[in-house]
Structures are given as structure tokens and as C-alpha cells.
Image (cartoon, rainbow over all chains, first blue to last red; front, side, top):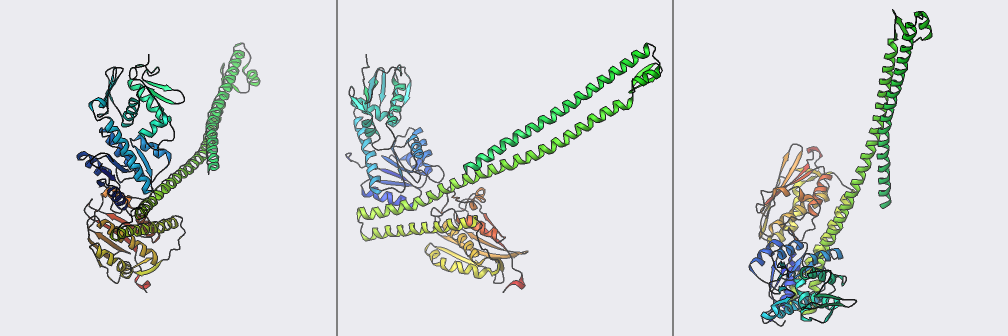
Length: 241
Length: 359
């Protein structure tokens, strides 16, 4: 952790043993930890506190983990979420990530892997926050678009206000940092997701399509988000001629 | 499984087509009869017309009568024999009636076939869904203590904690193992009960003794959890049940009450019994977290875990087993609560043993 203050983690888990075990291990790693037994309690806690990561069980009594994550995202809360679940099939994995989760771990899990993933998520967010910390890096202007990385908001060339998801913002950040260079799909996956979360690099393509729809005047003939066949993408802030 | 379904669906389709065909047959026969009657009527009308023409041309009435036996001549007017018209209409009605009865019979038979097949299909689907959700829930129920166990073990391996912390971890692991062991027992028990493979004895049992057998081993644990258990059961109350079943039932209800008292940090459990006409009722009252009245019936379903339920360690099978065992004993169980936080009352009712049957 390179930030001065260690990042706080909220653990939302209804099983007291598991909650205690997870919390003790996170504390041993130096993270301040808060725990909640159900979704409503977690949302209430998050209403008054901020944290750097939420470890969220899927099968909670009452409101389930997916619903909690949905509720957070619709409130504009972009805190990263690591799902813990007893159901580890791929369909569930995709559901969790669609709900706005950052990573997904099936129970029973390995402690070391869990800690690694926590670290990886926090590192990615540290990078994102540091890379958007100054007035110069917080805002990106290209082709009449204006993106505010800290607020996850943008104004498109046609004046339309846009709410970015954290993944869209991160991808844009990576591309903008390497403006003019070719960035491979694998690099994007590694920088933004960090893990083998998604089954394929196709996911990246879908995110690029979404960014084009938001910011290109003609998404079918992009001038900023260019495909480099067989390799990846190139971002041009000036726009291709 | 798949092939059976294909057969069922094919049979269903065939039966539906047959029903449509029978409907069409009735309609067609009815039309055909009506057409026949119309043709006969027009033939008679022609005969009447011809007879009238013969009469008008001066043919004697007797001759006309001879040539056309279906015609009667009165004065100089020819008319159809009235009985003939009547016969025709009667025949039409008779045939229509016949089609209606036969058709209705076939349609009824086919409709019952459709109902039977559709019912089987629906039942099969329900079983499938139940099996799916059963497997899903069972695997979830197992994975949670398993995850906790693995986490504790890996924590021990990774951090080599000092003895007091290690002690906590070991206790946690023992509790997780006990939890899984209880789950296996309960899942097997409920599977046995569902499959009907139970050897259920019916014999007169002294309720007070049966309850005491269950309460005494629990009392120590209850004291630690600051729960007092009091029981007021007259020694003269005898019920008809299986001795093992009554044990399981009372234990499960008591464990449930203890779990409901845990979030409240302790409280009271009161057991009292009374004789009703031909039955004996045991009420188990606790001062625990209670439940919403609407959830009373759901409590006895498999894997019910109320949203604010206390028993996070439960399998969701305990009260399901209680209900099945009470049914086997020809008894009943019901749950009552004034609402969350208001405590709960579980009432078990057995058939009473007749005084002369008491040992």
C-alpha cells in the first residue's frame, strides 16, 4: 500500500465464523475492517462511512449481494466490490460482474488468493486515484468530449451528460495514459481487472464499443478509439484524420 | 428422464389432435344428417308437386294414390302423408342425439387423458425444480462451514497465532465440523422421511419422561447461554408415538428455541402439557426473537431461513423433520408468534394413549 492511510474494508457476510475469519485476516494485513451481517445494514453503514473495498457475500438473508451492489452503483457509489459466493458457476460469475462487481471468489477459497485479490483491487484503485489526482490528470478533453475521472461523469461532444461506470473510466484512463500508442486487449484486462475474471478478451471489445457510442460522433467510423487488428486499441485525443 | 418427457409430450399432442378430430366428426355428421333430411324433404316436395299436377290434369285420385303411395289426396289436393314428415324429423333428432352422446363420451375420455398427462408433466417439473433447489441449497449450506473451516486452517498455517488466538480458531473449527455433521444427519434423516422408508412404531409413551430425556443433556448448555428451561408436565399424560421420533421432535423444537434466544442473549423456555379430548398437547414457549405471523407455515418447509432468522448455523431441515415425524405419529405441529421480538410458541399434538393401554 503506497497511500499513507491504510484502506478500510467493509466485510458483508452473514456467517459469523466466516465474517470473523475474513476480518481477522484483513486486520492482520493492516486494513481497518468493519463487518455487517446483511445487505440493509451494509447500505446503512455505507451511507455514513467510506471504505476502499467491500467484500460482499452473495447469499445474504433478505437483500442478496447482487442487489446490494446494484443499489450502491445506482447511488453513484463506485467503491470496488469483491464478491464471495458459494455458487461458483460461470453464469453466476458474469452476473456478479454485471452487477458492478470488481472480482468474484467462490467459497471455499484460499486465504492467500483472497488476500492477493484484495491487494490487486486496491492497487488498481490506488493507481486510478493517483493517476487522476491532479487537476491536469482529473479531466480529459478530446474531440469536444470532456471526461471527469474523479466524478465518473462526462459531457459528450453533443452536450449530452454521461455517467461512466468505473470500468469504462479505468479503460479510458489506461488508453489516455498511452495516447497514440497501441494497447493490447491483454494489457487492458490486466490493468483494469487484473485477474482471470472474464472468460475472454471479448469483454474489452464490448467496453470499447460502449466508449465509442458515448464519445464518437460516428461510432461506426471511430476517430478516437481505433482498432488495431489482431493486437488491440489505439486512443487518439486529436482524432484520426 | 428426457425420453419419458418426449413420450408424454407426443401422447399429449396425439390426444389433443384426437379430441379435435372427434369434434370435427360430430360437426360433420350433424351437417350430413341435416343435408340428408333436406334432400328427402325436397324429394317429397317434388312428389307432392307431381301428384298435384296429375290431379290438376284430371287423373283420378285413386290412380294418383296408386302411383305415389306416399301422397294422400283429400278433395282435389295432394299432400304428403303426415306421418312421413314426422318420421323424418324424428330420425334427424335421433341421429343428432346419438352423435352428441357418443361424441361427448369420446371427448370426455380424451379430456381426462389430457388432464392426466398434463398433471404428470407438471408434477415432474415440480420435482425437477425441487431437486435443483435442494442441491443448490445443500451445496450452499455445506460450502459456508467448509469455507470457514478452510479459512481457519489456512489462518493457522499462515500466521502461526499465539495460543489464545489459536484456541479461538480451533473452537471455531470444531463448531464448523459439528455443524456439518449435524447437516449430514439431518439431510439423511429428511431424505429417509421423504422416501417413506421409516419403521415407525406406535406405542404408548409417558410424555414427561420423554421430555426429561431430551432436556437433561441440553440443560448444561442452556445454562451457559443464560437460558432457563422449566417444564410442567403431569406424569399421567401418555401419548402414542415412536420413542425415537418423540426424542427427535422434542430435541429439534428445543434447539430451535435455544437458537431463537441466542440473539436475545438468553431468556426462558417453558414446556407445559395438557390433555384434550383424545389428544395430548405440548406447548414449548420461548422468549426469543419470534417471527412474523405470516411466516408461521413457512417455518416447517424445507430450508426455510427467515430473513432475520437467528439460526444461521441451522440446516433449515430441523422443523421440516419435526412436521414429517408429527404427521407419521398422526399428530400435528404449529408455530405461533406475536411478531418479531415477541417470542414464539410451538405446539405439538399427539393422539393420547388410552388409560388401559398405558404400561
